[in-house]
Length: 206
Picture 1 (cartoon, rainbow, N blue to C red):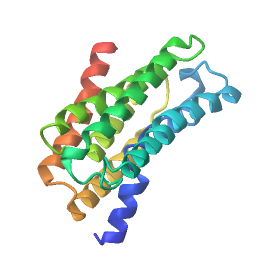
Picture 2: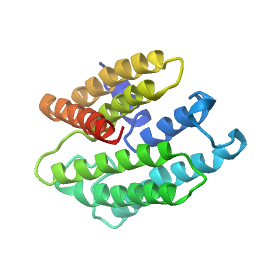
Picture 3: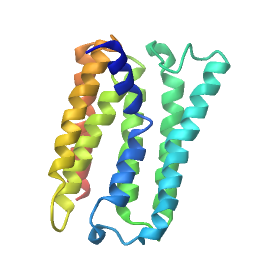
């Protein structure tokens, strides 16, 4: 894989963007029977997710670069990943709590956001000792969530979406290896950890 394509895949499927993609899929693709939130009101949830999981953490990371706490937004050095990951995890956990406290919203929103927050906290703790792939954790968790949603659906299936995520996972993880951002162990461990966290949590919850 050439470097330009690898960089493009890494940016387009950056971990900070995965919650936006997931919630857009749930809000506008899943069957109406799975959600009670009216279609015309779903943009509010979408806006909250984009703001709190992408815009605010992104601004936080940029501020850390400007203040000299990070060398760059890529955070190539493991030692510099802790603070931005912790800040992001807190943003995600706050969003999950907000979704939980809003009684008009479906439980699935809190469940998904809570799992994403947990995966970021997991990435943070592992990164204190080892540079696990955040892309891997995010994509593994995404695949796990789609499998869970597929099982919960009253009718139909999202098999095609699952196949697409599997293919994209292979491409993005290959991109991370092509850029020498991680070792194979860091990529595969991250993917497996994200997937298992989602599946085990869903099994306990449902």
